[in-house]
Image (cartoon, rainbow, N blue to C red):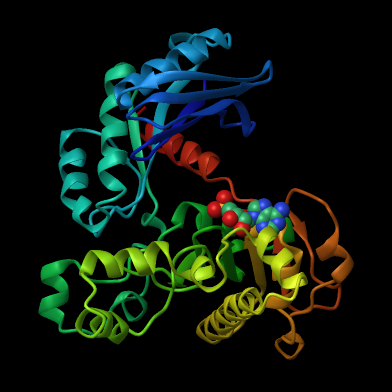
Length: 399
Ligand code: AMP
């Protein structure tokens, strides 16, 4: 049976795509349309034949889909005969409605629109992407894979905020968690790498990218995660504060006279590493630290302190920890952050081997010392592959 899946990740001004052969995990082609909604958009397309970039007007997502079809054609792929069995879409928020990927139909789209209020910056663009892809590829089943779904069945003790229950249920206030596709993919790879039974493994996964989150997973099921009702909670991020006393928000409103939108921008876009140091790329941050910049040093200290606090808390929740895994842009590439984050945790059985940690290897690898009771790993995340696999599973169930 053919098992190629086309994956879309539609944002408000971009469409990223990948064509994957799921059984061999091979990326046949990938690319992106950037600056959707503008006359000077760009489309990049990459396959075994090479990479091309073209500037084109992209007035809307429908135009973007047409450009993608044409780019595939120029790249030698006839999408109607490329063995594609389905299209998989990344959707940021599934709310309480979706704990698993879903085949798109009118009912699912209505439920997704209802959830949009929880992710007003992301879900509407995801839905537009689904509608435009359905029009551009009318014969292919479309599947939505939700970034929150992996965490939908968190234990109630972890997903519940201690606020008035009626207020919470009237307004969908609970901890949903995000980066679920990444946490699911990475935590699924760890037992394979360690040759362990997944049902016996207690893990912590640190997804450290521009957005960052940590998850505790017991026997394959998540039991805690650091992002909450929105992606603002938890670790320090590129531009987000992570955990903050909610009282700060009242103070900024009442005393500093800031509007809700201004506070939203301050905490989501102007905080975190950018707010503390002026930069959010860790390569720039380390250069500033090396040059003696005190703000950059404090930013790094706060960042590391927060990670360590979560590793300790999640170890306590798990009771016994078997593996800690780093993933995403910083987790995969930044050996300084990895070593600082786990420094001094030898008493917890966590020992990094510095040579393994500093090796310029790419790909999934173990970086703990042989005598470390807890395995420490780096596993490059692959959200597109996870979306493609889940999409294929949904489609196979219909056959
Ligand atoms: P992501 O959101 O997963 O794409 O991660 C993006 C972030 O990864 C960037 O903002 C950088 O801070 C970080 N990053 C990417 N490459 C490197 C690198 N070679 N060394 C350190 N940090 C990196």
